[in-house]
Length: 196
Image 1 (spheres, helix red, strand yellow):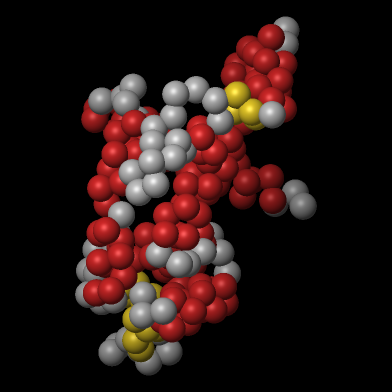
Image 2 (spheres, helix red, strand yellow):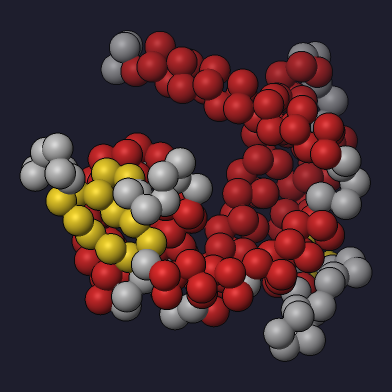
């Protein structure tokens, strides 16, 4: 059983996007326990609470990506590959497989497999680099760009709803802080891994 607030309607179907916004009972109880728990180290508790909120938000973003992906007949991970390529500096050239795998923090073999599936759907182009034939560059096809453009209005409206409490400056500041936390987490992981 889940508790839901006022959810926006799906532009294409008119149905509430409750699945994305609902807070399940188990999660609500966990939040309550974490909030009410008395602690001698408030900073530690606050850090754990933030970590939980990041995980919870990530889950919902994954759900949202899966919905966008289904609208064009692909999977969530495939949508992520397309998103990385859509944000490449030179979209005509695209990005090497290795760069995409690093951006998504997945093995190169996974990107190779998924890129071949996307190529069959005429959503992605695979082309050997002119500088090094061993390097395969991935780029979006015109069909893929059109498919993503068709969703842009819905994505824009949903973003405006989700980030309604933040203006541009606050959103940029939040992004900067999250990037800083990510960098420190990477350093912390490297430090801990030395002892393993």
